[in-house]
Length: 599
Image 1: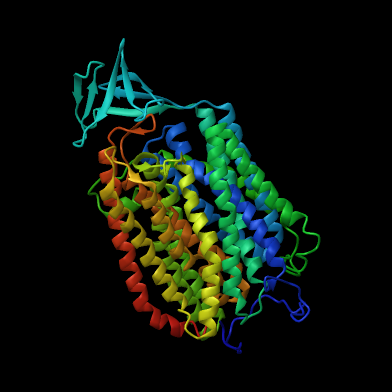
Image 2 (image 1 turned 135 degrees about the vertical axis):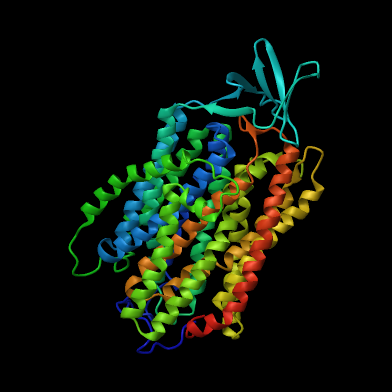
């Protein structure tokens, strides 16, 4: 809720061409929300379907190490949320939200199609081991329950058994230990085709660029449906957010299913088809979105220059991915400053943009805005900083939690059937779809009774919740079976807790940006919101690297060590999240004053 506008209150996009009394509604909301809901649903169908496959594709198809896999995944998702900063600005100044969304949808669809073509034409990487300068072939018995790895030494096939102290035993067929190799002496890798590795990175680069135009501007269009002070806004964003998860729900089941049944190319191909549906809905809207997301009046048409510039920027993103993959590992004990200096270009770009951009926007707000506007912008920026904490930990879902599901989770459902590790990400989407209407009704009911928590309190609940989810899984790890695998329901419980936490921050955060931002930069502020998530995604990749374990041909050498490693990381980040939630709760009281009635 926002108090009655005053001269000091920020203006919102002009929607005076709408007569609220005669406006047709969709479940009590502007009918245009239905089309934007469906457009976002299909876009997220494509993105989350691809994301459900990506970590496993990198680790099990290309045989990248856990460090490279988690780093590349984190870098990709970081750029996915960084490019909206530019996409939102270009839409505000020149393109308008609607044209930006259409252009982004096309580029993303082509990116998914590129991944599909690369997977269809390429070949899986071949595992090998290097020991004392000699290279050995490695084979993996994927038909065995443990997917045992073997090192081929002439006519002998020696089973690879990782030990808790980091050593590796090579076991002969008769069960005798042929050799014990000291930690770090036996190195594992995969032989990859450079052409198809390049195709992979090109596809990811196109998805990254397209998302920059799509993501911030579809949310901006939703915000423009509501007048200032309209109590339906939070509920509308929650419904919109349910559309995101409705799309991801089905894609996270279907894309991994097609990958398992047909091949990697089919999973990525389905993601491309979903993205095309999204584009068609906004392209052929039948005039239903006329007046929303239009280019700013009086500005020259520079759309073609922007489109060409975006395509030219794809190789730049490709360069950043290559730089990230080839970055040396940080030196232990070197200190924080040397660590920052040694960051790959992507890390420097993200942190530099965030550390410079936030103060710059606040300085600009102080120069051109009123005192009220400045205080509201300050409140928004504080919440944006805590948003980084939340998404850093929440986004372990696509990296360390997916690998945990693949390696240390019993994926049997009541013994009736078994799902894949990629499909476990569907739990989050399922719980969001099931709980979003409940949360929407809850917020509306509490608002009517004057007891709705403030936005900062909702954020603090979210932070504590994401921490409790990890601690719940740590508790469940005590009941792992003899194969060091945790029951799937412990992982499902984590996603249930995380989903409730997510509903306390993400749709509320999108709505918060449209409420607290100075109107003429609301698109850019939406981009700043996604910039905070971008930084979080990058740090999430770094955090996931702490959970890296040794693998051979995509399989862990010691499940016991893998379980211990994951549990230690999840315990630490769970405690950090709860601590951050408590700090924000204490800050919620001064933030409430700065927000000047925004609830």
